[in-house]
Image (cartoon, rainbow, N blue to C red; front, side, top):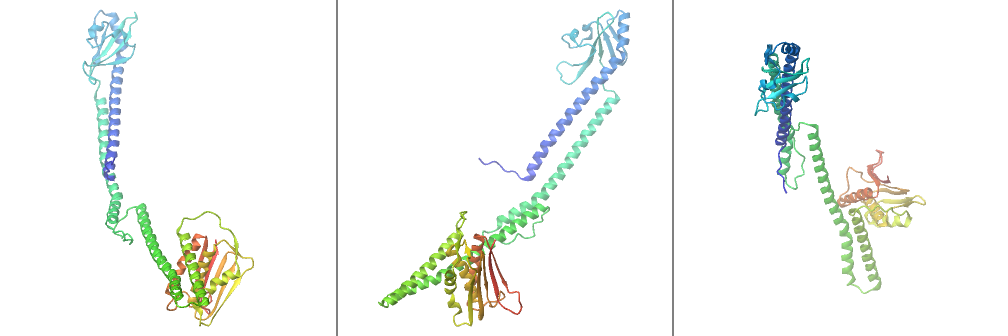
Length: 420
């Protein structure tokens, strides 16, 4: 069931109205209780001031009703009071009671107090005048002014709260309208037309802009990743296609065996690449990786598979492997990781020396190439390999850095992969 949504201004007005009503009700109750208290206090004081004199006068005289000053009356006979009382004799002694008019819950008819004379007879003292003199009226008017001031302050507060609510919600409304107008492919930063009035609004806009930036980078990264995968898969596919077409051109066993080896090598290369890509895109497995030794043959095979890039170039390369070096990287992952770094070093170097140095939890490839500022023509595709290198390092908790050599006299880069 869908509930009707209200704007922040509407909710502010509703809640403020509820609070205002509660404040007015409490004020009214307090004023009413104050007025009743003042009435009872005034009536009791007037009765108490003249009570002893009234009782003594009644005892000395033989009259039914005694009228005293300030409209206070004294009676022996309860019927002479002519008040709507069921049992006057049961009234508490020396306690002032307000008697309301018949059919009214507000208007008082009199205030009565029952006391005893020296002979134990009940004497009824009745105050019949309006208990409000000038002082009490001034009190009432003061309370009225207090209520009026409270109402005025509440109206001013309502205006101020609605104004603050507008300052807080208008930027949100503008932000919502701008986001609603955007297309699915619009990842540009939110412009400065939204005048944010609070730090929280600035934080929200900055967070959204950072989110858009991360999404944009992720899309660019995925596009580069797709280009890289296409580039890496194209080579073994071309080898497989060429070897398959050559198989029908000769029946010599040596020729057929050579083409089969080419097919097997290309298939293994594609299988390793696909398996590594799937491992990078799948959920992280928390199972600890087994430690395994690194052999010179394994590392040499990785480098030799890319030697065609330095053929006919005045380049030498060497492998430096620390004895008893181990790693937790799977064979296929290590092959792609080191293969891409070596391939980039081979492709971006025209002459000199390339050193592949392997120690415990550290892989360093140093070349004498063109450096990070430029690259030779025809090697654009190899730069995409650094993308998957970073993904592998992130997945297997390695830190990857690629920087120019510190010496100004020596060209080239140093690629480092170090376990965290």
